Image 1 (cartoon, rainbow, N blue to C red):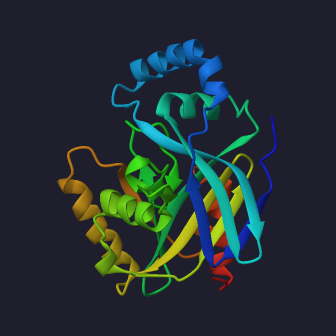
Image 2: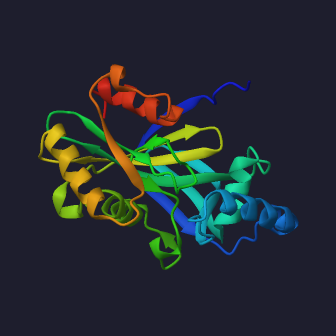
Length: 238
């Protein structure tokens, strides 16, 4: 069994993310294999959709800045790369998430629904950016996070205070760009509010919500980058 990748957390003040016309050679060379793999996965989970997403390369940390070049590909290629254990090491999965923190310090996470490619996993709200998050060749990660949080929880920008900084969590072939979102509502009430929103959705991304107040609330279905960041927050560091 392979060991979990090491996790490194960087506190950064600014994201410098641009979008190029880079042609992903892995996707071009393995297109037939990718199509076959996606067809099999879609037979297992018919709701999977092969839309357009953004992946990244050339990550760089420079003091308070994180920069990277993003490029467009299809979800089938991204999912195949991920499920084949990252055969092209020159690229990485760069995505944004909102860390929703209640007024009593509880952190709200969601369990991915059975129809999603990460079914059963417990995450902060967020996801892989797509072309709708791009403005003038720049990837607006703040807008991507706000969009994902609204879609997955019903919370809008008026419901929380977003931190001025980000935390970039490096873990293997991914860099999660996390932004703390403080909500002026205690944990249980906030959880009930979001679950009420999920109940109105025809096909919500999250099947249920979880509150984390201590390490006792950690679940095996939480990825290592999630528990590493939660551990940092529980120490009072943000």
